[in-house]
Length: 386
Image (tube, rainbow, N blue to C red; front, side, top):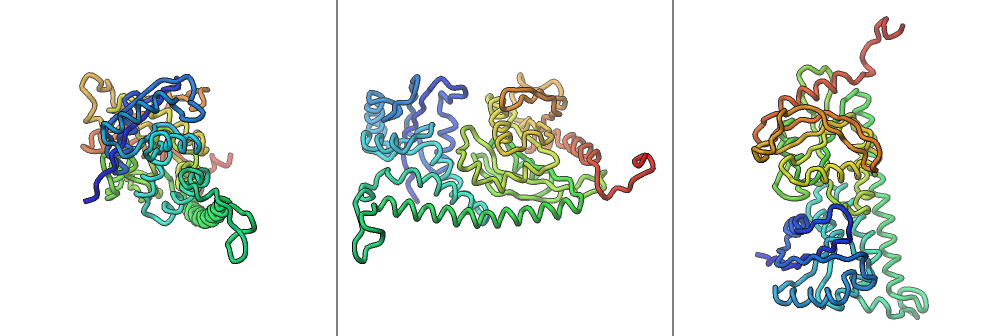
């Protein structure tokens, strides 16, 4: 059995909102990636230190704590620059990684479909391309001469950058083909006047469990972050709707999702952009549900899906403490614009995808939305022509 790497978690409070003082989410991410957190350190700074991100004094403290705890790796909750990462590794004498690389590692472990693997590979290549100076001192040596790859005096790092650049180009071309295939599939659904619904939400909110409940499927579910990476689409039966309805389960969102992943997963997240309706699934038992809603709205804005109609689905009703239970399981919610502008009232429903409580009410809302959407095949009446 493979031994888990022991990691020390580091969080730096820079005065920004949503700082995870307990490093709870970073710890869950680490465990999801197969790592074992053994210690946690937080500190406050007005701004990151240019060289070490945390300053020399705190770096010395982390080095001693890592030694005492037996940590073999340091993991930062923030994104580090290539220079900061290199300097920290030299100072701490341990491998140092950040939140971005951790999420990329999880995605690489979980991707199953051809498209998903291509998307992860693109994001990984884009990340690595900025970090060629990390540990490999040989990259600075000059190469060249007769029978040697590269031109006279060309550095190894320049050759590696060129190879990675070529790999990025090839991966983008392959992803573009996949994207065109998806567009063809969407056009076919449009010709059939299919009503499309996409599940979106913060990771581990229970999207896949709700997906299985609604379509009687067996999509993989687990109480962990990023259990689902690849989009799964199934037909959804709504008895009173005389049209085809499809439901898609998409990758979960998370705070500080790397922009490279947003770009790389554009084809997958396009399901949300092109949907007729979004089911925004929220972990109703989480104390941070408002922050998680905000983070999802921010990503939806970035991919151009902010204006798609939504139903807010507060899941895990069975896990909500009695004192926090809603007076009514259905109603409306004031959904704020991710950029801090206007807000709109959207329908909301509390349910438990695990026990089935409240699911019938959600189905009624879906019937209402699907039936109200006009179809091209519906014959015109004299009133319509008037």
